[in-house]
Image (cartoon, rainbow, N blue to C red):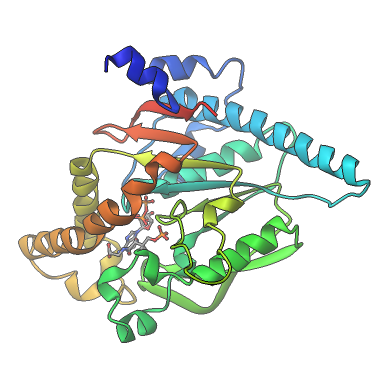
Length: 317
Ligand SMILES: Nc1ncnc2c1ncn2[C@@H]1O[C@H](COP(=O)(O)OP(=O)(O)O)[C@@H](O)[C@H]1O
Ligand SMILES: CC(C)(COP(=O)(O)O)[C@@H](O)C(=O)NCCC(=O)O
């Protein structure tokens, strides 16, 4: 099959960086360099030019989608002769460990909140729904953290059901990367957002179909739009290991850190340890559970070596 036919048959329209940047049209830049500096992760830098050329066109696209979805809700309400109130627009962000999902999620949150309509934009990460280490240990799942079986999927689905039912206050549990565990009794409260961003490895995964009984919804059934952040495996692997080495010098020094015991080991031992975590857990998860969900995304952002997004694929329908 030639390239042109392949492109026509693909469910995505693929844009190079320059072509995508043109779609910003007249969307104004609403973040200062200082704000962008604060929003980027320590280990995944974002330049002002990336915000202008990639994230502003995306913000513009999302503003069209939010408006269209609100129009659809209004049509349903008109048909039913009732008002179901405000139902949040939910955006899912998926991708490997260490690909930079959290930076993208924070940037989008800030950009969307600056729309002229000043929407309330909340952000929740799915790691809060991980089973506590005590449960993972008891079930032999400590080396499966981030895999589908390591989450309390029922609780995540219940959370999203409440959000989409328009419940005014919905709480989610909180995970600490420092402690490497869910924080007992700690929660975040999401209060009547116009837009909710849900970020996590697992957000595009399907459920196993039941042999008997009721089908359980997918997490993504609650999404109005989904984004997959992609990069070559070699790059993500490199980012994971170098982030681990940087954290060894910083966060691991904190006695509260789960990895504190590794703060003083040699560089070589630490590198080997990070390589093992990557190879035994995160790489396997990427291949078995995360990459297979990429074709379900509405938009795929593909990063190059310096974390810059080099291409954008938008689902045609
Ligand atoms: N061991 C750790 N200690 C402290 N912070 C961490 C640790 N591992 C990851 N983080 C931070 O947690 C956040 C989420 O990381 P991750 O789940 O790999 O997703 P992503 O890199 O795609 O945002 C990042 O901001 C990262 O810097
Ligand atoms: C907590 C994570 C599973 C990410 O979860 P997410 O926020 O995507 O739901 C991941 O960062 C992690 O800790 N993986 C386990 C292996 C490791 O220590 O890298």
